[in-house]
Image (cartoon, rainbow, N blue to C red):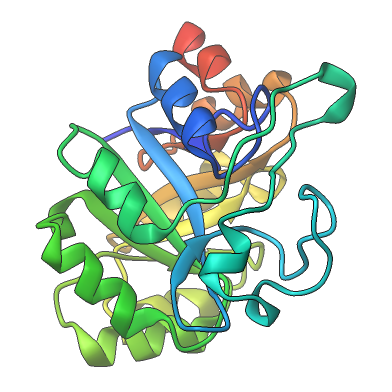
Length: 234
């Protein structure tokens, strides 16, 4: 199934990984949300891409240096030149509370080590396993996930097009390869399909990249900051 994933929400238009960004992505036609999981100093799983808070928030330092109580008070900004209203950080549990009942697919990316088991527990508590694909650039995160759960849907994020990646995917019974868009070709997508993997594209930085990626035959969807643009052409 082709999924229009709002990348950290509609992050071209609203502060990324916030409720305003997620809701806007849905309004713009996204049928999926991609987000990132980290852990606070006191063990709470939150949705935040960077290790450091500095780029888009009113705080400085690492996410893991702060408790959730402290982080819940800071502001998250969008691209400041666009005058976005700031928003607040979101926990994984809050996200699941607001969105798990909707007809959406979630791409949950591990951005910190050792969050796999607690992530799975929360997703299971909200009866959302059938809506989620769990991803990481770190292969060992996915190895650990598979050790914990035999049936979770796994996608490996990579820009490596070597055939050894195919064996790595088979070793953890992954279902999807999540490939950087500028590495894709129809021949490469056909190779993954022949080996039983679906293909999702990431790294689409401008709308002009979308149609060439679609022509390559990706079937697992596309991760975009501008879901309205993808909805318009697909």
